Image (cartoon, one colour):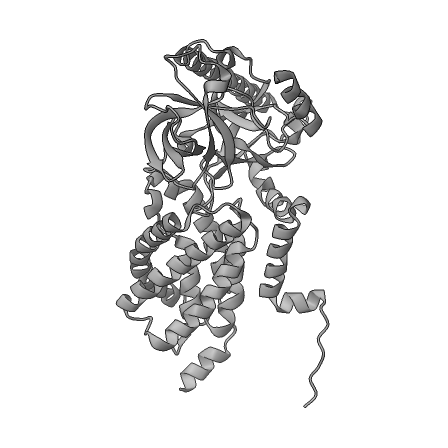
Length: 294
Length: 182
């Protein structure tokens, strides 16, 4: 019996969707810089971002009196909400600064921030944690920028569209950042003496969250409940001194210390966040900074 | 017999409306409602329950591609790798087809067992994909979480499947040999 030869074409792929999906998955894994999946997802969320407002097609002059009043009122409301968010951010920053005593990172000014509203909470997979915000490239947001509420770290920008962006939360398994453990009662501690660790999300959610874990803390490090956990600028990924939480308990493991943290914020209730316009330095800049430190 | 042949020869009804509508509705439920309940690891995996329903009760043409599309819809509303759930749900429909030959899915106890195993496998498979990407959370912890998700999903399936049967019957969708003509 003669077997007909099938050519690999678009029609063939449409007839075999599992193969097509496997190819797509393989492309996403093998060629992450192409970001095929991310681009497709950004397109999916575009209508949602547009629906969240701010897209006004008709020029202001052509609107009726009623519509103008409504738009003015809306703008005033947005202004009030932005100012309220700014106020709460500054209040939180002041609170964090007071809580940490007066070490150098608490007085370090943060990079300029862009206020954003959370338009879509959560993720359809129970393993991943993300949210969508209503600011994007047009507001100067770029991938990798840290997202905070006050001075507390929430996550980082994962993918960005023109007027919307996806935030990868600190509880997502793909999130990892270098951290410092600081004793608020011993503010004079030198930078070299501070305990370091890596915060890694594990996809856990409430009621497990707000419990985070810090990995790779050296055995014998002096870590006590009540100590503060803040970000480290070791790799330049995040600015120094963003609050993460407070140490709740330490569990000695073989070769390292497991540090459980009580997070400062419940991420599921956030409405307004700030994106810090912090850019990760180039490799050469990092090397120069390290040389200067030495 | 004649009626069964007649039902099978009919064109499928509501297939894409059910898959697309159900997929989008579940995206809303998963992202906006379920996380507010703060159930932790004990959160039901409604997508897997739905995919298993399609795998068990949809007509021959209504299982494979709809399961794949449902998985892709879930992938679009997640920051995970695109295609992960697409592949997993396609495999789930294969497994459901085999399980159907051994267990009668019209019995609620069998539904419970099949959903328990199916949801566990989907989530364990997803964790496997996370491990490939370097984002694994540790196998022992993953096992506990998969078991919790499966334990939360199985009772949901027992409640929802009879309701789904009733809805399809009310919509006038034909059923032959235990398969709905969707």
